[in-house]
Every structure is written in structure tokens, then in C-alpha cells.
Image (cartoon, rainbow, N blue to C red):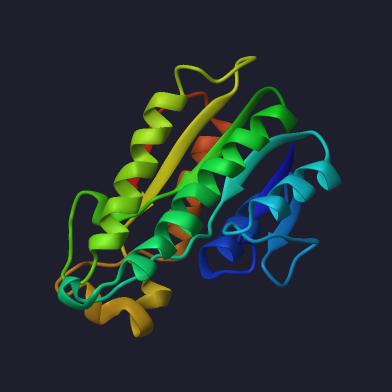
Length: 200
């Protein structure tokens, strides 16, 4: 398969690439690295990306920024970060991507555990991740030409504990390689409209 991997240079993206590259043609995408560059918060770069890459068998996203911070100090501009980047960026990727996906192809998006297990300071992340999962459920019943769409919802990654661990007190982590398996299941499997929760 020819797989477009957005966020290929991140912690999770590298694990996905390591798992899938031996058996598939991976086209890597990052904001500043990879075979192609694109920014989820800039829709015009996603349109240019799809045109440059051409038809693919799968689109997988392992990227997306959200804002973590106390609700009492949160501004509308800060809340917009997650809406414009992780939510609308991935929605735009899916909307554009369905035109470049081959028949029976798949789209795999990223949400996260705070969609169903909120944490202090995570209002933006919870709202965004819940919306992504809702979009996937609804889009799955309308995807054309046998195309599929799923979301991956991992708990905090072991490799990210140094930066994000304090936000997830008492949460058990999973290694990125384990979360990558959910991407393989989505891409190589047959299910659609699913949220694959990656938990210890």
C-alpha cells in the first residue's frame, strides 16, 4: 500500500513508520520535515500536499496540537488552537483525502484518552478529541467507494511522560509501538467508524 503518514517525525509517527515501512510505501509528512511538508492549521498546505502526492491507499494522521491550561485563565484564542489544528486540520485532511484515496482506502485520525477521561487543564483537548470521534462515527456512513475511516485514542505515551506526565496523574502509559499497532489494525483491517482505544 501507498500510505500518507502525517506527523511522521513525532514520537507516535516514528513508531508507525517503523512498524509499517517494511511492508508498505510510506510517504512521510511533517510541518518542517519528511518527504513533504504540510501544516494541519493551514488548509492550503493540505490541498497542496494531496495534489503533490497523488492517489494513495491510506491516510494516517499522528499529529495535532491542543491547548492545555487552567480553564479560569483560558482565552478564546488559546481554545482556537486545538479547534484549528487538531480538529479542523484532521477534518480537512479527511475531506480532501477522500478524493485522493483509491477505492477501499482508509483514513485514520488521532484523538486521545481525554475524550472520555478528562483531566485538569484539558478542556480544550477533551472537546477536540470528542469532536474527532464524533466526526469519524458520522463520516463512516458516508465515505464513498468503499472507503473507511477510524480514529486511534491512546492513553499518554510512555515516551511522552517527561513532558505530559504531570497532566495525567495516576494514568498508566503505553509505549508508542503499542499505539502504532492500532494504526496497523485500522489501515490493514476491514472495520470502519471505530475508535481504537489503546490502554494498558
